[in-house]
Image (cartoon, rainbow, N blue to C red; front, side, top):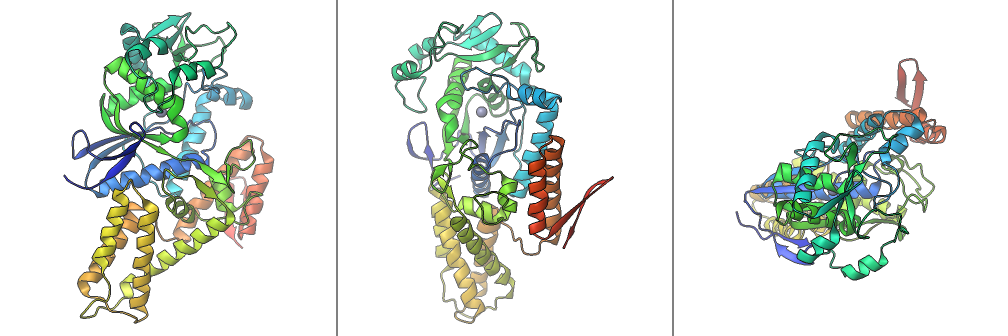
Amino acid sequence: MTNNLVVYNTLSRKKEPFEPLNPPFVGMYVCGPTVYSDVHLGNCRTFVSFDLIYRYLTHLKYKVRYVRNITDAGHLEGDRDEGDDKFSKKARLEQIEPMEIVQRYTIGFHDVMRVFNTLPPNIEPTATGHIAEQIEMVKEILANDFAYEVNGTVYFDVEKYSKEHNYTILTNRNIDELIANSRDLGGQDEKKGRLDFALWIKAKPEHIMRWPSPWGWGFPGWHIECSAMSSKYLGDSFDIHGGGMDLAATHHTNEIAQSKACNHKEPAKYWLHTNMLTVNGTRMSKSAGNGFLPHELFTGNHPLLTRGFSPMTVRFFMLQAHYRSTLDFSNEALEASDKGFKRLMNACALLPKLKVSDKSDFDIQQIAQRCYDAMNDDFNSPVAIAELFEAARIINSVHDGKGGITQSDLDALNSLVNDFIYGVLGLKAETAQTDEIGPLIDFVINLRLQARASKDYATSDRIRNGLLELGIQLKDNKEGTSWSKL
Ligand SMILES: [Zn+2]
């Protein structure tokens, strides 16, 4: 299979021709969410970006195996193996089982992914479902002498590894500076080196999520799950590893070290990273108060939003920026995307009504070629969208009798819309919404029920009032919550 696709590889810091290890097969692993809270928009952007990549590779007739994990154990609050397990802490606060936390937020995550029209991955493995594989990998790394055990916890020996391999290969940082800048835990640390990280962590007596291992009862470190699950489902070497760019410096750096120390191979050929979200020019974060959740964006219930925006408008907005650029949320930008999305969809709706002529005044093949050129240039969706606006202009012109189009060009236009707007970009019309609004409102009702179950009545009221402003009235009764349009 030949094509001209080039991708930006974080590993080489340049664009490279995309040449899969075993064409037409492509193995792609993307780090999924840690399901201890609602998925935030930054994560949604990452998964929408990889959905675009997955859709385009599939469109190019690659047989893609897309693996995206669910982290449901082992993720500590601090990236340096300190603090509590995120699931246990939340479960303790709410006095429920950690797996109830996992279940609640996994369902919530899937709901949001569906609303954004992302295709499900082919395999969605969980950390808790692969404890045995992770233990085997830790045993192998110990046997290869790249790890050591202290009192029931196993650490990866970064210094030892660095003597034979380039530990910072992904981000090209200077390892001596990295050591100098990392925190010294004042002699309290049982690690040999400051950069060493835990592969397996001894469980404290009160820790609920624990498994037996050769080193006693414990749980896996966060990084080992992705090394174990990617090699299990995609092989020791595979094509694409993706995730948010905030994962490159620690999580992905440690993944590469683990996989090499275990399998003696470079795990992924291409490392792809998505950029972050900003709000009015400032980095989006919970602590800054500018980090809104998907449902807040859909309902407009956030002090920074003037109104709600539909999931397809938000998806379109995300795709209007290249995945490696920062994406800035502002009401003005969202309004512009809303207008643009509607313009595109209105033109698509006119397609079946177009009348053909004997000759064409437009070159559809050239637009299609430009769409391929854009997507082949590291999945440049904003450039492809600009070309699709040109297609929309042609549709409107023909419809208004300002130009003619032949049957074969009309067929080409139909293919262009189906392949790129509905297929690769994954957009869909939202105008005839009676069928689609139901699941969306059920989803929002579910979020409200979750808020009430957590005694977060402020959020619960915000959701009810926000829906009311949109003309949707909720009614709580014995059977649950029903809704009606005002
Ligand atoms: Zn990962």
